[in-house]
Image 1: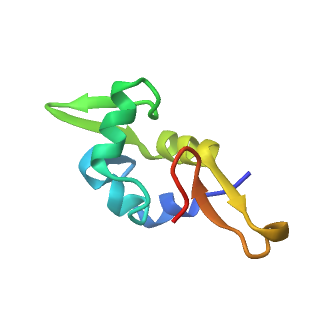
Image 2: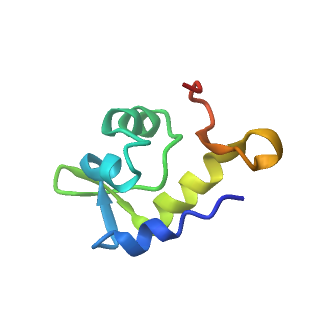
Length: 88
């Protein structure tokens, strides 16, 4: 399993607004992609503050870790690839 807990240490809050998910994830995830997943019930746990969709950092990291995998020969040359997304 891939450990992404270091992302929490770099984030200044315990929540991530959907609009900021790209910044949080290093641009791996986009606001639009998260909205699509949420509409299909496939995104991380979320709640709302006013009209904003918000994720708890620990829930978002747990969800990202559950969807991530290393690919490459013996993982040595591997890179983080989001399952369900085509490799570039």
